[in-house]
Length: 145
Image (tube, rainbow, N blue to C red; front, side):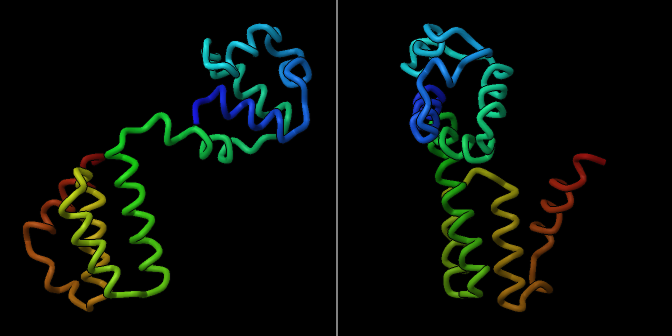
């Protein structure tokens, strides 16, 4: 959902008119354009609207995030969530399955490394992680230093 659509949903959930939603922040005709997707809104104004009406910013972010990320990122996020669920339920078969799926389909090197180390840990095979993977880990995590 786009920002305007999310603002409309939030406003309706709060039981507010457009005028009450944007009062003191932006003009109502402009706000109507934002809700309809015909205009964008400055970040500062958006934050002011959310704060004024005590809308959780993480909640709002979750409403809009899929509209602003690539399909590749959406797939990576879904695989990461599936892997986290498998880890939380200690389902080694699922951990291994999602590790292989991540390795085959993701271009996110850190996600791949995390999946490999996680699977090795749950399979009691940390000592079996090969030097190539260890070097990739060092390379990825030493970038800041």
